[in-house]
Image (tube, rainbow, N blue to C red; front, side, top):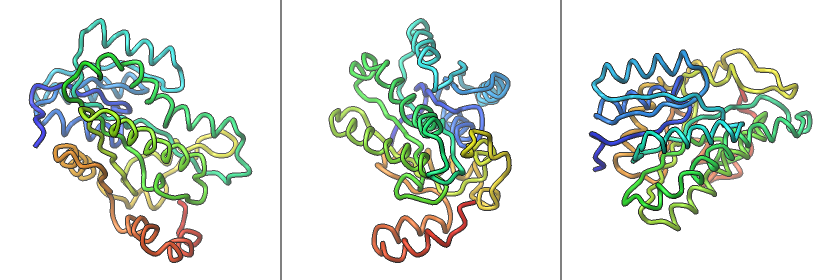
Length: 263
């Protein structure tokens, strides 16, 4: 089993949702936490809660669309001489829009946040990763990263890309362990910030999201998968059946995917 105590975690999207819940699970195991994401108030709150659990915690605002923001984080890591043992690349944004009605700028935005930002961060820290004897990267993808789904074309594409990049990374460097966390419907507010074809926010909870798995339960499953160095871990409820339909009975998946509510 992986040792967590007195190690250091860097998490993106650590101020809310799945990221916040995972940060608490690491803190309970004695891991020091570097929180990054948007929203200083939420990051401060999570930092304080982590410290109450008896670990050291820091925060740094991070905008994954802005390379200078990532550069600033990398500089901060080097100045503070952090030695990072775990990464949880969790930050992301969803979508609710028909493919041909979505301007290419929206596709690029989702790719920058969900894919390129994290890749740039990891490559910017390559000296640390190469010098480490053992480092573990957990990547929050999505069940929608395993197949296409209505109203999610750019989102699905960005999540598919994560699998290709980080799986290649793990195959090239045996000391870099990668765990893909693959959530289905988890009870967070991600649907509220999902982007419409116009670029505006969806602004409401999907019924499926509202009835999804409790976020703390999700985080407990996630950290258990990291501890066991699982390659992939599906997390969620009955919606996970779609992954098995897609793999073993694709004809059934094709029928159901067009009928299942995309909200």
